[in-house]
Length: 148
Image 1: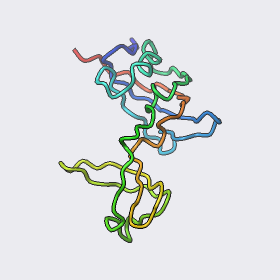
Image 2: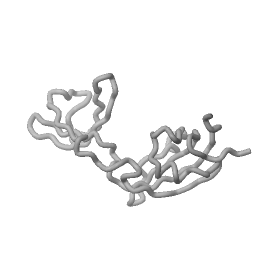
Image 3: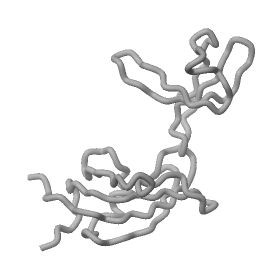
Image 4: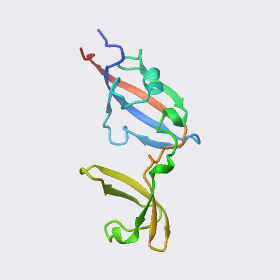
């Protein structure tokens, strides 16, 4: 008997994300490593979960989510100004570079260098896909038994 995706299911799926111009943003198929999605743990938006509930292994679905339901809108509080002295040869302050910064508590967060002005480097810590509508193509590989 095939399990059907319900709230609080765990799902193994290939995910391809496309931008509004049709170009591919990312896909788990590139390295043939499907993702594990855990519904009901707040790691996915309610709109995303609603799109895949009721699917089963072998199903494929394509849907588009507005930016707010995909990776959110850009948050101006996630733009930070960092002293150029904090950069080095391994992680140079160059516009377009993605640099990983270690936060208090050891949590690492990537930021994109947006601008350099004198000794000030503007770093955007928003998700790179924030503010964009995203089309998802989901290929359900397996639906794991619902947690009880």
